[in-house]
Amino acid sequence: MTEIQALALFKCLADRSRLQILKSLAIEDMYVERLAERLGLTPPTISFHLKKLSDAGAVRSYKTQYYTMYALEKSVFMPSILDLIQEKSDDAELQKQRDEAYRRKVIDTFFEYGKLKSIPTQKKKERIVLEEMVKSFEPGRQYTEREINIILADFHDDFCTLRRDMIGEKLLARDHQIYWRVDQDK
Figure 1 (tube, rainbow, N blue to C red):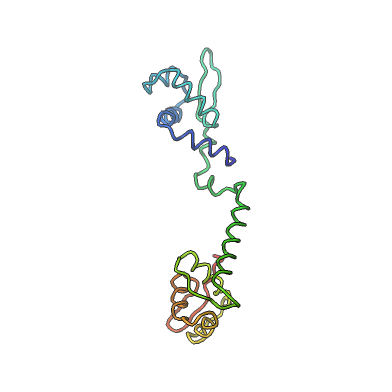
Figure 2 (cartoon, rainbow, N blue to C red; figure 1 turned 90 degrees about the vertical axis):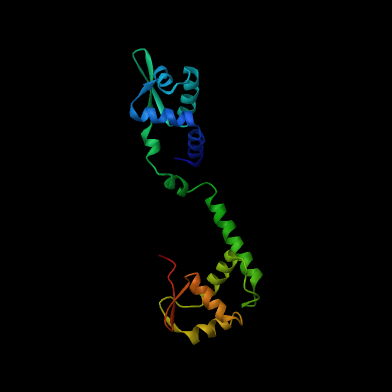
């Protein structure tokens, strides 16, 4: 399902009468008059909503004798909402570029000649700065607290705060006096 189709479907589902129609069609295929009687709505109202549902791909129609029957298009409802919102959108690459530009801007703002000018107060910016600094630690290697302090002191004088924040953000882990970089690829 494309992003446009998902948008049309969600827009269509935002109506109580349409949801009642879909609930009825989930039980069995029905024609307009039967739906109208069952839901207490007029046939023109049912027809209007069925047209919207049909345009969104939620229902399909077929002829049986004198009636046009409507059926729930179950395949439309098989993917979960999570599948729909995680699907690659047309803007995904553009969003990725914007995120990277934002990261670069934050790094350029807070670092000068490899030193941290100040510790950001905003959590998102602080996370970006800490992620940049954690690249100085080798994955899989264990460090003593003194080694951690020496590496962090190269960035900023307040290495205790940086160390504590890195542990809080789960970029570093520790067991007593031994520290290591947490693998973020998991």
